[in-house]
Image (cartoon, rainbow, N blue to C red):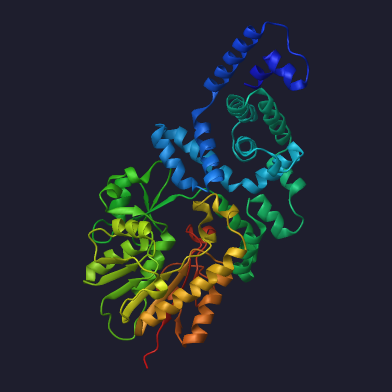
Length: 486
């Protein structure tokens, strides 16, 4: 297609500032119309889907993992084409920082000076050039076709020029040229993370900060799908056989599902016997059920931050086996409805309330506080999230986390256990919150590693920190606090 652009003499003349070839106005208009229709017909539907995802993320702050599946179904794209569209959309979202630096170098202007829709095309093209095995010719030509079909010859020429400059170096050469000089900044740039997030990971790793490269690489890779087999309905072994997956390493209910596709189409998922849930989240729920109480378990369990319902469903299924019940709190009605759907036919009562002032009667044996957090531990599953979060987000969330844990403590019976968890390894959201709670309440902090039998490399304790490069899970943190019996 790049050759076609060059053979369009009138377009090439105009792009270069030369007078166009002679001809009547009607002939020129007719030829231009044919050219634009031809370029529009040449647009690859797979890349167009990816481009539409990028636009939705940029213009509406949409979530890529919600927009893309709907577009694939709407446009009847499946199989290898769907896998490619997924790689292009998610990969471009993840890599934005690196891509923008290359675009700025090639364009000679900041990204703020480039129209948003055109910037989407450039990001998609540079991603293909530098971070996929797609040939340079195909990456450039398909991007030029997208630009030509939507913006015309002039801006298509700009896209062509920027991408050809981007293609003059490999990704490693661009990293050498553009990355910050400090070690953490360089790794952050290489693996397309904001530097502050890479620093937070290094802080959480502590003495193992030498693993930062592995953490960022695992965080930058596309994760496999994790399923959870609903206890009492289907075993992990049966689920693996039915789906063609592999039983998980850590959770007795986990199944790993390789490849693309829509897990919602699987029969066990459609029938409510299984659902998508990261194995780390499964382990958090299991830890709550395994924690040793002081006194009997009276069967009153609480999920204080239940939306969208994955952990509440697993807790409910486990509670049903022993005749227990679970209360689940979610302040937003639309998310509470998601919880209701997730826990259908389980002994779970959903309450629309603020967990900090729920109005529930104290005396719970087990309480899960899966607190709202920055989500830094699940960036691999939310490709655009790393570029939306800022360091200032942490301070507001820390206040909320502290208040929720305090409310849970008030609802807990003496001898009961609260498990605090976050999908973030950030020290302010994890060990600092727990240390503050222990200091204020006199809680007994249990060794959370004991609640995850068989799981290795969880840190020095007493909290447990999972990592994608070590465990294949999201970077989940959990701590277990038992209320003293007076």
